[in-house]
Image 1 (cartoon, rainbow, N blue to C red):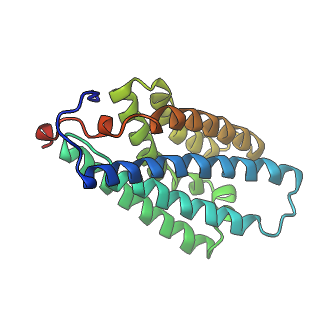
Image 2 (image 1 turned 120 degrees about the vertical axis):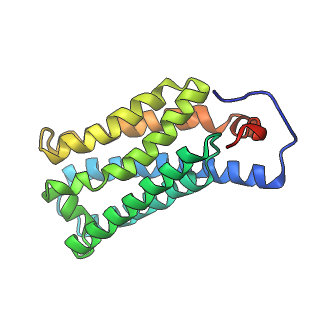
Length: 201
């Protein structure tokens, strides 16, 4: 569980790493919200010539923001952090595949190829790990829900159980939940994320 008492004074490194970790969470929530807006707007303006470029920018930005949280997360058990990093490396490999297959058009692969959304599942698992960790530590129940529905959403979209319109509204729901989660998380005192450093293994 998360520790809410101060076990030791925070060092400058402690403060910086917690801030970077939380910046990653904030950026991820904002980027996913912008992606939801972009998808909903594309329903009204399907001929947007810049849609693919906008999607590319948002998706690559999401990889960066999730990476910030992955590499600066504080976990008592080091093997969990190593596993999370490995999962993130897998997600980067999946991004490379998307770029190669789509010849730079990430949106085309994600929307038109059944395996496209599947290649985003490793990234969603990274973000889901982070939200679930916070849910476990600080009783942010929506974190568990996000960890479950983000990969499920991509799976359902890949097998076409939801349409593009349904995917747009589904992403909007995820964005709202992630913003709520973020609002509850980022204003916590910094020492909550550090806890007892003597317990780190």
